[in-house]
Image 1 (cartoon, rainbow, N blue to C red):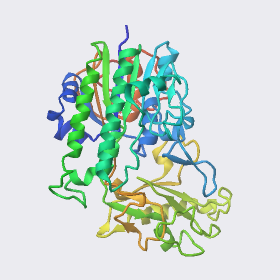
Image 2 (spheres, one colour):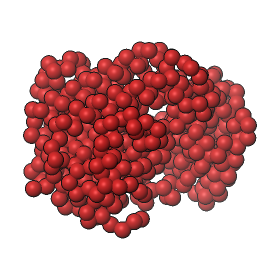
Image 3 (cartoon, rainbow, N blue to C red):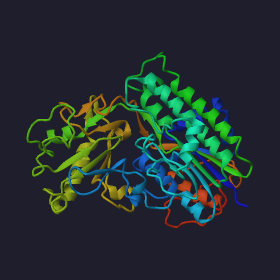
Image 4 (cartoon, rainbow, N blue to C red):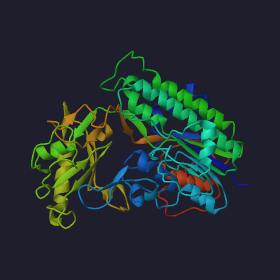
Length: 467
């Protein structure tokens, strides 16, 4: 009989904290590490929640999915962006594969599961649910009433986690997390299942709101602040919650704890569109007031060659003749312009000199590029700085975030811990996020899929040779 698989996802869990600095104070996680395999998990490019969790559940890259962030270009015009919710994920995720084999799943809070679609089992949607009081967030629909009897009005996310009201954020994170794990325990206790998957978003929200108080390397660090222990205490709280789930898993269950990316201090933001205006790549008919979005700015597209999007990384787009409505970059000059921008952006200084920016061509990151990928992918400060997409700041860098207070950017490595039948004990080395899906299929004795980009992890019987 094949083992059951239980995957506990902690969005943004940082391996240097959970697997190194604090592991001895996380007894339930430590028990899994001692019993099985553990290590850092190389995320996808870009290392952000959407699309990373869907890449993990499909074994595919962002380019295969055509999902390059929370919002994606729908057409080659200058304004249309769509949110990448469940409708954007056309590939089969792991619970679909279990369903085709006649096995049932419990899915809770996994990003890109709203709007809800039927599965063989039960599903509670993710933080992309606009309003759980109004919008249907469960399959089957009647599960909603059951959840609210068990846990009250359901909370899928924290309200405005980019805020100075950190005490409110902290209280909401704990209330939300307690509710999510209450629902997880209830479903494990009342449903038959072969595959269990939950993702807790609270850790990501806490990192973004409180990282400065934890990390002496953060430029806004405040030694001795009353919030200095907030993040560690929450890791310990999560470990307690994980312990209660472990009590529900028998010896025939493989348990995994995973994160989609890690966390690192955010040093500042590069105002990409202000820089493009300054350097003559982006033209405005009239000056932009501070904080003006690109969509609201008076852009002269007939003279503009490039523009950028804000976020934890920058998607740089070129205004190509014959592709964009008022394109001016001739295809023959496309590569030369990309080369020029790469050279200049990688040399772009912050307040004290170059910040170590890395610029990638999409064809170097993704073997397939469905949908409309950016023309260049820019990691400012190699992910130490975010991209500020608004205009009118008067210079090309700032220490303020245009979407509200935010202390952390995403780091390239998350974590992966697994223990149970078929898993050898020892370090987990050279693991990639896209390895999770083929490893689950192998452990569950389900057919492999050669289209998956990953490989079965080395500690699992039947693993492929190293990369």
